[in-house]
Length: 411
Image (tube, rainbow, N blue to C red; front, side, top):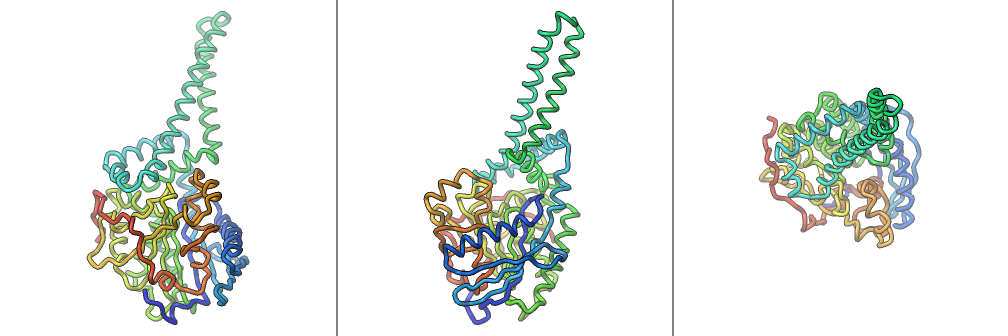
């Protein structure tokens, strides 16, 4: 990753791949607007956003002046939230069936135990919706049982044996109402949301569903078109579950010969990745092959940033190596930590450390004690990803040993 004049950027196309998120992508624009302004105030540069004309993908334009250089960046969100919403449109009983099926997939395959050898945080995060949904079910059962007991005691003198039937009917109403209330409050509990998230990959044992494969193909064409533009860099950012989608998109892009020689620099940034949750499953042949192929390619620069403070990611776990598919000539990704405990002030860290979901998005936010990771300089600054991290060593504490049981790859 040597620096040269070709590493200077004044025009950039950025493609952001969200994780498993059903919400409209405007949330990412507003997050970028707020946090970029906060980071600019800390780091002493200028940055501003404006809306883009309506097109196929949702996005915005960024104009920045950093290190004396004016840079224009067009940011697009590669939207798959409609697929997420469709996968979440299930009944309460169907969600509990998903719980049983997902738990069986990860436990029976041995994937759960191997994932725990990497990081306990994301495994605990995966077990959280199971525990929360079971607790909600138990509370609903307890409320129904109390209704039967109290109702029978109060109504038997008046209704006789009919009191039992009336009490059971009332208990059923309470049971259903309480479970519906819990689901309605999931914006606070995140139990249904996370259960649907883990179930989406587990239901196909790590194989992409047809609708997702079709969307990946569309994304490949979109990025390929940008690679024909006069931009200096095309940067693809995959966050959370979007990281493993990005791996497949980038691998397809290169395999299909859609990266032109002499075109824009092609860069790939993965943030807060949870790749092992999918690549450790038995039928994830496609993802493992994509990881293997991408790890040795010269056509791109791939940087993977996580942080031990993010309990929802597989922090400092090299996604290629831990999946057991590292080629002999492996060169990617460069794995290092965003080091939340160092790049956030003690006061800010105390404020955020127990807000696990918020910390999972910290990579897209401002740091009040920044070091060499700055999302806004990466997406709107005057250097390519390769130039920015040309001399950056990987984190010494990264995990790069093969752990996955399943290592077969698609031909």
